[in-house]
Length: 126
Image (tube, rainbow, N blue to C red; front, side, top):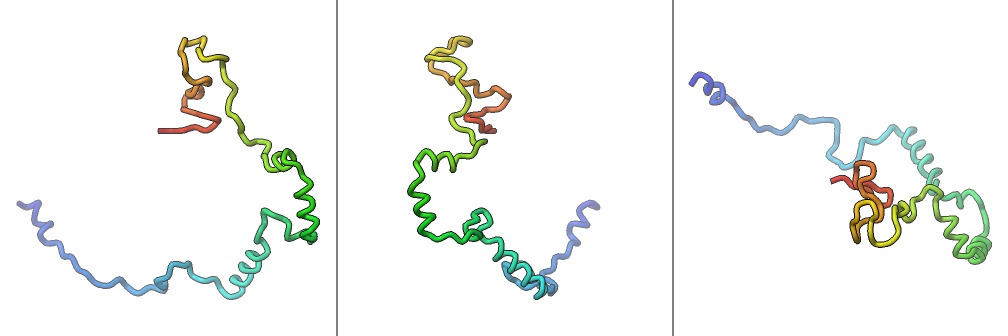
């Protein structure tokens, strides 16, 4: 009985939270005016940082002409990254039967080669 006494003497109160300097808005607090202007100018300057076409003032006609003259192979070579995995690993054997295990119709590459299930260089964990 002595152990239950502290539980019965608990007091719960409900009151509004104390006022804070934060306003109930979904945005972070604003920076000082000078810092905010610097931030906005840097943001505008970096727009399209991955495409540098805004830095080179070429006419639109010449860009379209260059794009039309490129062959599909040249476009694919330009868009393909050198480190991009394509096609996965080479098969360990030819035909339908695995010569090591004797399995027919199984995977051509060992999916647990490095201790994880991997397909086309991507590891799936479950």
